[in-house]
Image 1: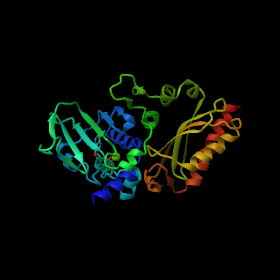
Image 2: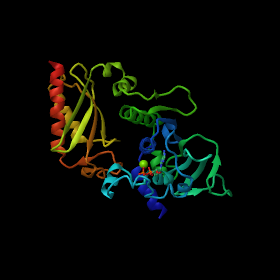
Image 3: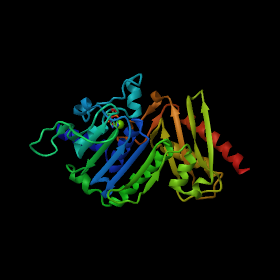
Image 4: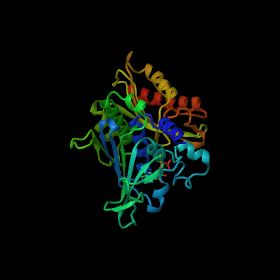
Length: 334
Ligand code: ADP
Ligand code: MG
């Protein structure tokens, strides 16, 4: 039973950045306007996320890390929709099976914050001999999730991480992506105990500002805004894409489908093809693309880490987006 849970967890969380992404999405879903990330040893030793969102009710703490515990069910019409958004109540459960997890949380109406420690899906004592019940602590509204010693009980996986610096860079990259997409949220990301921050952005109205802060002025200054929708294929698309004055050695694609950061090899290829006629040979674009499609059309389950997506009418949708982008680029180029 526990072995199965561990294996299942290891398929959802394959690296610290997967845990970080899930926790960040939870913070954003909770309506937070600040999300602060602190990391030790690339997230393997410590991954801590502090938000100022809704908080979690004390009575929900005992079941928080059970599989399929989600408070996000009632908002959606059917199970398919829920699975599609990644609302499956598996993230915290998974993390608790392969790390030491501490949750400190306060809702607006609670008089104090509550702290619980978790192992293998259930509340556990902070120290041997103590009660596992959540303890009252002082704290502000919001939630702090602390993940320690990720993969401590999966030594083969743990040993596979040769470079904490590499894992930290993946975390910075992911925080940067969400910072571009969630402009109303302030984000910081730093190494634990250090004062200098890898990322520090306050809430803004401008996506372009975020690109400037995170990717630099050279990218931001050559961006074209685009926005289109298509009733036939049922999608809305908007974003920022570099024009013909900017190119790099490798394509940067920040892709969000229904507000989740995902990967799509098909979209990446189509964009590269679109740019082939605008950029010099071996030149590649920077593209931030936010796609909204009927969630029932998305299948995020093709890859265990839920990164690579496919969806219904994918070819037609991609073609329509690229066609729009091509005409925008031609305008700017002219
Ligand atoms: P899911 O996001 O799919 O619902 P998770 O395992 O990621 O499942 O989280 C389980 C539940 O815990 C969420 O549905 C939510 O109710 C609660 N939760 C987790 N993180 C936070 C947070 N940062 N703020 C408020 N509630 C949270
Ligand atoms: Mg979640």
